[in-house]
Length: 385
Image (tube, rainbow, N blue to C red; front, top):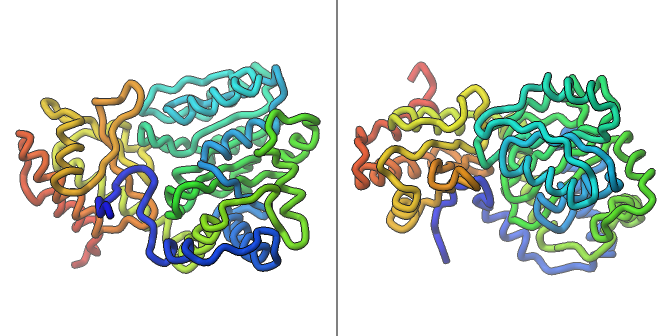
């Protein structure tokens, strides 16, 4: 069994009680017992989304939910505004294109957040745009986009507001109803701290009206009308055989969140982000994005001069058993990323930065030993201690 500490932006560490729940006996997925588990899970999911709308579980990764969000509302030739400031914003545009839509891109420099006004200007000039897609938390760059402010602008337009919260829901502020989000998607394996393989989606009444208007959506497995019909059945079910064990795990992981309290969980994530950035600065390393737009769940750091990605992450993994993430696409070999989402606390951060200090020193980078670890500890200690 690999005991490596995962400090990557997903998948994240899963609590033993969640793993135990996943090992429970399989039940009939058309039974009243499973319907009860499914209902409780989707109701808790809506609580985390902060919406009065129903949520639906999809067997698949977060990308499955992204695809469902697009495939059920887009018909050939429909225009969709895509904010592209990283790998996952790019993915939304590619999905739109794959389903016959026309992506209208707002390209944002990787490492920067979108200016909400730019979305407003683009919508003003293109009144036929059917939807706008935004990635809340771009893990490829460590940037959080201002989805609340974007929501205020979207309120003046008819286009549907679609938000990817795969790596932020349960770790940062997301208020689906409060922000006016029409379709919100997420995945199980990030801040929710469940095993990979489940996705969730919730839709507003406006979004459902558009879904119902599309006679022949270009998807079978992800046809949301079927999920809605099955979810409204008695007992509630899914249209196809779901990953029953993963739904057990999702149910337990969401119970953990309910017990901790969503607000407390978000505060914990914000504190972990602050501690991580304080430690990075104590090491005289540079954050990749501007700190004002930095993510609450992942920190992207420029590789120091003279240190290669393979050396840094290889030493961390092979010698100290701590797994960091590298850069993606054109950022490969230029940045490394530290995930601090899900069940991560000061304990894992102290372990990580102790290992990072030793790794950097071994690789010839000048390090004042103990400074980063002290920065983590100081962040968590009360000011009056």
